[in-house]
Image 1 (spheres, rainbow, N blue to C red):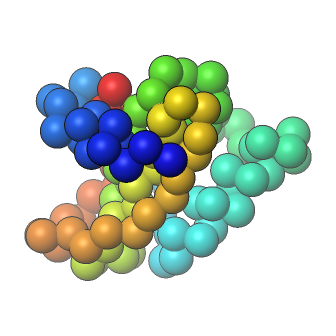
Image 2 (tube, helix red, strand yellow):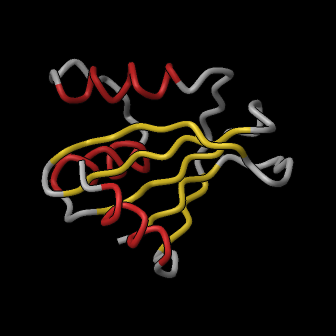
Length: 105
């Protein structure tokens, strides 16, 4: 994984912020859902989540930041660079009471 490219994507302006209904208490649940999606075992009817996962799989190099209101001090970084995927949990500066995915390309 080219971490420099990932960092450069994060330094660009955010292109979209999507509110999401789902709250998780552990970001591992997001990764389990992602793995299910990749294996074709995804059964969600939520159009926002389906769109996010479709973009994650088929889109250009990007970073998705997911923030869950149930995890006050961390966010999940989902990166894709040159066809490789990376998942990192990073500290959050502020306690946000919202669930959202921020998109960087």
